[in-house]
Image 1 (tube, chains in turn red, orange):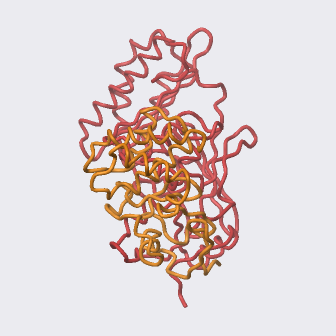
Image 2 (cartoon, helix red, strand yellow; image 1 turned 135 degrees about the vertical axis):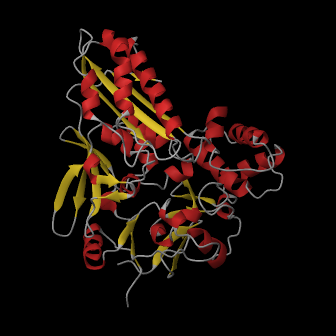
Image 3 (cartoon, one colour; image 1 turned 90 degrees about the horizontal axis):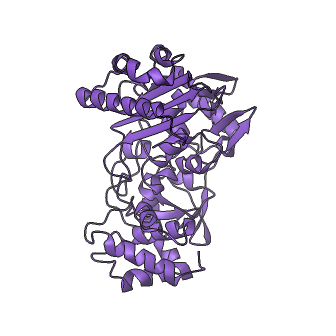
Amino acid sequence: MVETCYIPKDLAEALRVRKETGAKPIAGGTDLMVVHRRGTGIVPRFPWPVMIITQLQELKGIHEEDGKISIYSGSTCHEIEASELVPYQVRKAASLMGAQSLRNLATIGGNVCNASPKGDLPVPLIMLDARVELISATGVRQLLLDDFITGPKTTALQDDELLSRIIIPKPEQPFTYLWYRKIGTRRANAISKLSMCAAVTLDLSGNIIDFRSANGASGPKVARSRSVEELIIGTSVDTLPDILPRVLDAYDGILSPHAMPQYRRSSTRRMLAYFLTEVGKRPAEQIIQ
Amino acid sequence: MIREIQFTLNGEVVALTCDPLKRLLDVLREDFGLTGTKEACGEGECGACSVLKDGKIITTCMVPMGAVHGCEIMTIEGLRETQRGRVIIEAFADGGAVQCGFCIPGMVIAAESLLEEHPEPTEEQIRLGISGNLCRCTGYDLIVESIRLAAQRGKGLW
């Protein structure tokens, strides 16, 4: 009998099923169960074979390994927001994803592999140079999350692979300032209209030695540009007001919003201007509200 | 491969063989007759179908049965038999939190999940705790007040 849904008992069995049938994984179900629902009392129908991976213990947990944070793909948004190991902006993004009931189900693996342009977790993860580890019955490989997400709803995941974990490296020096902002409507369950995060590292004399920023819901995938970041890196925090217009224009160039482009462009300008202006004041707090 | 789905339902170990993609919501209402869990939006927006999974609030319209294997599920029918459940339900009744009542099973589950995490919640915490549950009648204020009342009356239970 050809089955349409598998419940593997462990990771090895899941990888075998994946290789033999190409069944696609479902973890929290918060997106897929809604997309494929057919109404009260009727079993949702998927156009492909499915494999439930919620129960796989090998895909759970958040650990620090070799100075890097590993978030296993079955970790829920609630577990991520509650973990002291996870960097601030990732926790903050997780804490603003839907209601408590959704955050207890939705997983980081689902949010990343869904690769929605509006997905919340990839934004800070890409800013932090996170990598993904992909596992199959025959091997393991890693790549940058920014390269793994190839476009709207598309990733580099092969038919025999599962995402096992997301690995977040620590920056060479701790960030001096951190900032995260999400614009949505209803407090619970709002899908981002825009999300943005940024981080800056200053040396003792106020020179910017690291600057990064990333945007969600502003194009086919998370927008991040190292060439724009290099406009700021190496300058003094005191000269930020002078270079701000040039930086904002350059940053605008990396956005390609599909719907409401004017709104998204002008809001992004204002958000980035706000962050850099706050950094220019050199506040005592690390987290800029 | 797991064929028979086993889980704990309101304290009793149960097992069933069904399509693993059948929604937990439909299994609770149709297979077990636990109709206190309601369906409204069917897409995780309204909270009417909330239950506790391993002590944490979830919306059952999004959960395939295959993901319930090995879990502890408590519905409103189980919660109302506990001391905590009784305190919340009495506070809702005394505080005037209920009008049409359709959202209330989900609201009581949300209150339990909230009080488990914050036994002495602030108003902000209460409002966040029920932010995934929609009510079309009350305007929420009396529900918030009733949860505060439950926290006072049930001091030490959470």
